Amino acid sequence: MAIAAALREEGFAVTMVGRDPAKLEAAAATVAAAKGPAVRTLAGSVAEEAFLDEVVAFHAAEHGSLDLLVNNAGIAGNRQVGDITADFLDAQLAVNIRAVVLLTAKCQPLLEEAVRQRGRAQIVNTASNAGKRGEATLSSYSATKAAVVGFTEALHDELSTSGIKATAICPGLVDTPMADSYRDAIAASTMITPRDVAEVVRMTTRLSAACIVPEVVLLRPTEWLQPEEVRSAV
Ligand SMILES: NC(=O)c1ccc[n+]([C@@H]2O[C@H](COP(=O)([O-])OP(=O)(O)OC[C@H]3O[C@@H](n4cnc5c(N)ncnc54)[C@H](OP(=O)(O)O)[C@@H]3O)[C@@H](O)[C@H]2O)c1
Image (cartoon, rainbow, N blue to C red; front, side, top):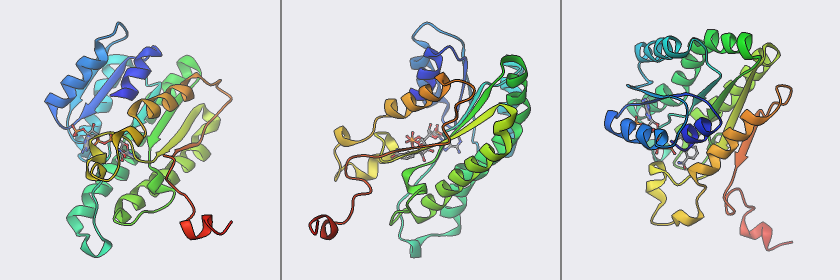
């Protein structure tokens, strides 16, 4: 929602997608409360290829081109590696990487149309700091997010000279419902905010066509620190 709101402030009409129609409509109403371009919604699961086709057709009918694709939907879940089941893994693969690759592929013609009309287009993929440095109890999630980082690097290699920029954003813990399993141990006030992530997306839209940000890592002060035994030795 924060990303949609920031993009709308930048003048983008937005199409928002999620599984839960009530949650989606509430988020869209919040985004649309301020004056600005159109906000459209489509409810469904990005894990379903037919829904991805529906999203692309819907956006194409409304706008005819796509300036910016944000692949932000994601699911997580904490499990020791020995407890990972096929269902648990397949659900994460379907949303966190399969949908990202397929939706990007299906959106390419619309992104190319934006380049023809306005000289530029963008893809922003929400990965995770866990995709840069795998984390205990998040092994399958870390693997899917590392795949998002690799996919985004390949997009840069393949599409940047045609005017389509690709960015992977790799945040640490963000204060959203996904962080709920950490709330007993970590205060919300010390988490990255959804607005922080949205500001990074906003920044990428403001850069000149010649300037690409391939990857942004956002960390909380305690993330990725050297172990205390190393810190105390120096
Ligand atoms: N929160 C963190 O600490 C954190 C850190 C690093 C990266 N991230 C990444 O940031 C992104 C956003 O996550 P969040 O923090 O906002 O988590 P969240 O509060 O759990 O929200 C996840 C979002 O993805 C949507 N979604 C999930 N499965 C979907 C599906 N099958 N089809 C369509 N939409 C689906 C959800 O909408 P519905 O429920 O309505 O489907 C919701 O809008 C994810 O890619 C996540 O991996 C989060």
